[in-house]
Image (tube, rainbow, N blue to C red; front, side, top):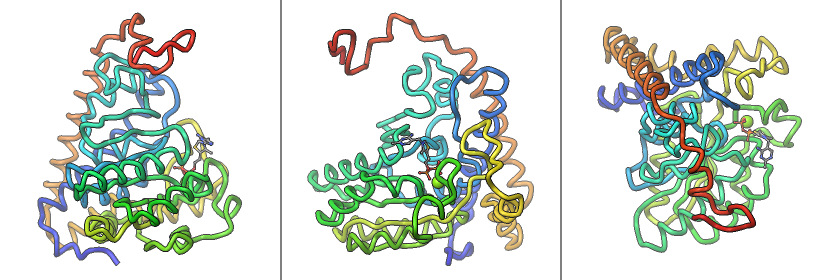
Length: 332
Ligand SMILES: Cc1ncc(C[n+]2csc(CCOP(=O)(O)OP(=O)(O)O)c2C)c(N)n1
Ligand SMILES: [Mg+2]
């Protein structure tokens, strides 16, 4: 059951809406820019899953930290990242978040508490667990959140992290985005259970199923989990049931999914659903929503222009900020 819309102030509701539309349009535009040849490499679009990142991050404090996945743009934007510097990173330019050394799969901004996208499936889970240990040892009330997919819950890193986090009562929230597929493999062909939240039982921690297409439900569940974590009660495993609208990566046509299944989930579009709910309740006017959408278009046009105008990095910097150089020499 989600939070009743009536319980949230308009400003907060519109902020949830704005962030979800920002992610959706950022990703759609990134896809166009990639097709037009501006962005090299792989992109894994987050379209369809926006409510998970936005609802979860809305429950966090600025001092909390998150770890992400190969499908990480949505998490980073939900955390408040600047689309200009994100596009510049995707373009491989000097003004990108990591001066073009992170790219889509390893973009990071520790100042935002965004401890990185991660090309290693399940790789962010022990990082968040370690960050939670640090927060606990420092005596802070901070919380670490790890986002990961259904496929990642078959990795050893998931099980090892949940085990220690529960044993040491670490302030961490494990958010599994169950979008029903690991790459091209449906969930019933890669694991013998449907409800991943059940895996919490093995580690004596709270497991919760949430509607991953409902930002308000994600906000409610995360607020409760963060409350437990901050008061020393340890970790929670949240399973967000959701769906990616597009293929695994840009260019994958997703032909392994039935048209019926895709249609069913398209009808549960998290942005359209929030929009309908807001308008039905007359909490906001259509023109408020249109205004938000127009601002986002302008912001993203400016961001793409910024990326295009940013210089390519100097090839002489290639060995800076890396841990191993030629002959094993460290330049860090
Ligand atoms: C350790 C590791 N194994 C395999 C891969 C290849 N790979 C990339 S994404 C992916 C599927 C991950 O599925 P899931 O965790 O459900 O995330 P989703 O793509 O659905 O968001 C795989 C197997 C990888 N990047 N890292
Ligand atoms: Mg998946």
